[in-house]
Image (cartoon, rainbow, N blue to C red):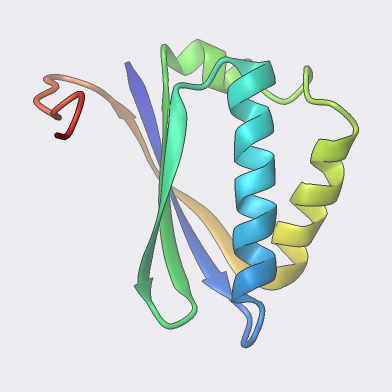
Length: 103
């Protein structure tokens, strides 16, 4: 398994637009590109961290070409709501002890 960690600096008063764009784009990537999903975390005011899991790095590297036209609107919404977007880590999984279901 492969994971990517992203950092986002969101412009003032643009949090809701950012989250809407992130969620819409992430759902389409999951549906059309083969990702295993992603989680978004708020670090502090205007700072977000997301990580996405993929079956393999090669699938992540090839992603983007299968997205429907609606993905571009979500991507634009995200980019316009951020002052900075960065991929901070590309990680190969060594061990996995995350609980699969929470009761």
